[in-house]
Image 1 (cartoon, rainbow, N blue to C red):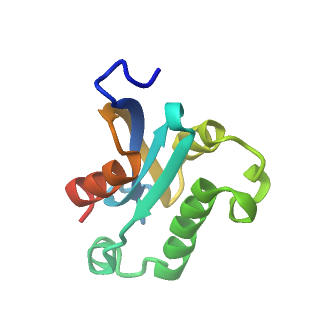
Image 2: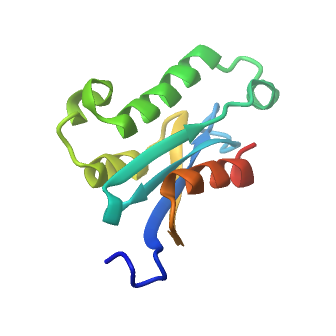
Amino acid sequence: MSGLHNGRDVFEYAVVRVVPRVERGELINAGVVVYCRARSFVTARIHLDEARLLALDPSADVAGVRAALCAVEGMCSGGERAGQAAGDDAGRRFRWLVAPRSTVVQPGPVHTGLTADPAAEAERLLDLLVR
């Protein structure tokens, strides 16, 4: 349906949150996942502010959080890095990533917008919502 919005396509995104102590509910934003169905595009942009994480929880498992965030990036990139989801299309990988979960790394609500460049949109959202 490209072209219906002046060359822009609908995209969806969710903020990737780190909740070091789930029972407290405190969180920091550590990345964004962007999906554009019209372009079969899904990507994650990650930026973990370790000082902020450790301010919330001085005993946070920084290496474990980094590993979980790398797994989000791997799921988006597809192929071998996506593990069991290697054969899934971009939409299925995005839906899996944004499914609610009660873990240290979890997605925020899904939002929508219009963009002519989903990759640039991911960078813009990372700057706006995370850095």
